[in-house]
Image (cartoon, rainbow, N blue to C red; front, side, top):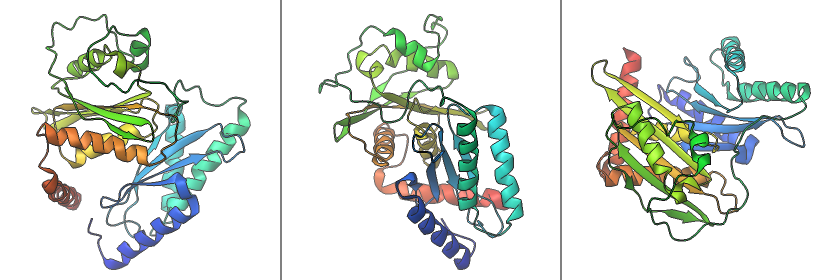
Length: 317
């Protein structure tokens, strides 16, 4: 990503290095070229109760003349709390125009989490959390359909009893599994042109016993609306905090359209740290390439550069 001037680029580099040193494993680089980062922030107490993920994109003009683009990911965060945090971050930016702001943002969010922890007896009511306990699963990843488990419908919150006759079920493709330290990741892809098709594909995938038993089924989709010339898109972490947003961001960078990608993860009992996000995105990218939704691997870097130039030109308009 080309910065507006060398001094601004140097300031970004120095801030990123400082934050990485300060926060260690809590700091994660999603896409170094596109300047996409995230940090896990907790209430800092000995027994952590409240935790969220702050994802930021640093535009070329940051910090001189533009703020970071941010997203706060926490399944327990209410709309009012999100708005309050957003107002606090924007106020901090206005008070420190032209200055590096990320450290102040992180610590302001931490203050919010500490106050929430002190004012509540229990932590968030979240059904699933990242890195669950060890699961026993078979080495055979055959995708023969099995009866749907009841918990699958609850997990993804869609009504499987609803008629699917009005929307044809598109073909579903399965990628090659990636295994690392007993965790296994596998991507699934389907062409989709409507939210109903997305719903039907997810329901069909969950009829597979192996997929239904995955610790996480992360997904994202992008549908191009020709009449409005806009994208209909959404994503789901399924307990793997920030994974859905990262998957959607990858699909945006590759400029894919009319496709749903699901990445299943079977947790093997050994923490992978940031490597799990690398495997999720690699699985997704591989199946998108295999199904001809992107350029060949050697041209992906060119496509990435092209998308960055387009985004930059739009900002100038």
